[in-house]
Length: 256
Length: 267
Image (cartoon, rainbow over the protein chains, first blue to last red):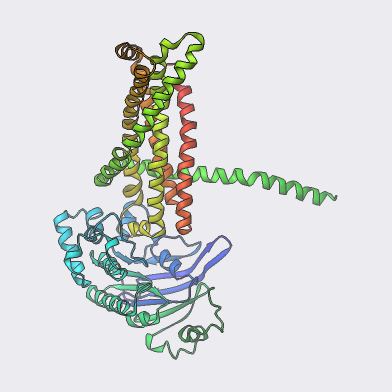
């Protein structure tokens, strides 16, 4: 793939749920090796944007392409192959309750890649170490961990198979500022270590500025601004200004 | 009333009457598509053997007490009813045969399946519904794992194996319940009762119940998984999915029981 071709593209992406249009003709590109953070208020379409890129939702109009493939059209082996280059950290970590920590981290290796259990466990322990978790929690269950530790386990699971692209869904939501800072630092470390592309969605501006090379603001189903983290405070864009200042009055009504 | 208004009212009435039918057809179609994918996943590899064994334990072994207790009391009550009812036309002596026939062909499979609808189908809907609500099913997809193969197929295979096995257990315990009452309360001879039962029962009595049980296993697993998969709206949605799984399983068990009984009746 040439450098000019974006790694990930949304073109005229439209998504409706019943009478509600969540995304309207949204265009967005992410270049290979870059970390893009999509910010925006609640209910503006951030999660839908992510799920379209992952093929977990299908666009009603336009298309999404990751490495030239539209994930929504893939089935069976092609779909599994598509996901083999993707890592996702979900908002609530989405760990499997019935599996131990190491089985969660090694899930793809064990169930999709057919790696033997001993080798998969060794790789899982290494991934846990990379997200600064002690190996003695490997045999614990997710319910025995704090929210911050669950997020780290989710991050270890996302990176263990060394994907080409990482997706982070509200990585710091529900965490205290110190845990959030630790998760942000780990995300930066892992993206750098793997040299991969990253797409994050968040409404946490500290997180956005820490993990993003670029930031795009989504409002009412469309991208209304894109720029560098350093430009957030002085963007001159009324949506960004209101979002950064946290004012309730302005172009954007609070989601009550 | 102008013709335009009359036509509009007539169309509204048609729409009012038609919308539940369209809704029901949509749900039936969705369940059929879900069942097709589930059966496809169950018949194709890779097999998740650990998940299937774990479901066999949950659906089969851990349901033994509830199925056993239901069967023993049903067999005992059936014996009392047939004895007192049969007494009206001096037919008390055929009670062992009627208890055996009733348990093997009808009550064993249906009651075991109803107990499992309340226990296993509800558990499947709740667990899978909670996984849907916490994005664990999305996570499975992103980990290159087909949720139908990982979640649905093991439950379906386990239910098809476990429900017939539990039915055989329910048959034995139900007949034992009838025997216990007949011998201890009604003064039957234990050996004559058993001889009458074993001499009367044919293999098809047991086989037809086991075939029914396998069909009920499919219903229990499909309803539990379908309602869990389609759960939405957080904790309330999971609760609703659980209720729908139990109710739809129970209704389908009765409907399929009648269909299979009418198919088997002339054998």
